[in-house]
Amino acid sequence: MENKVVETVLNLLEEICGDDVVRVDMDINLLEEDLIDSLDYTELLVGIEEALGIVMAPSELKREEMDTPNKIIEQVMKRM
Image (tube, rainbow, N blue to C red):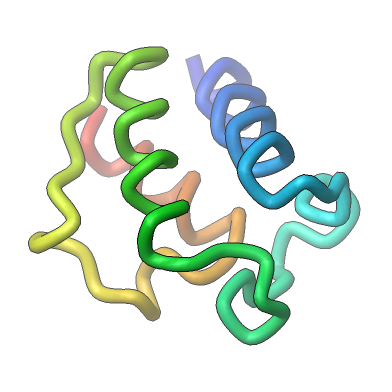
């Protein structure tokens, strides 16, 4: 199941960010590198819910908990 989560999150991030760097450097800060903004985060959370059935409300997450691909994957895994 972990592999499915990783692949799903990376696929969504790659599509949203328009860059495969999210696969190369999973600790890249998406905010600092201007790869994602608040609307993109909403799209990401909707994509996670649709693909994995995991509901993640933006209000329950802090930006610093969701600013790298690894941290996003960690947050998804916590909710499984």
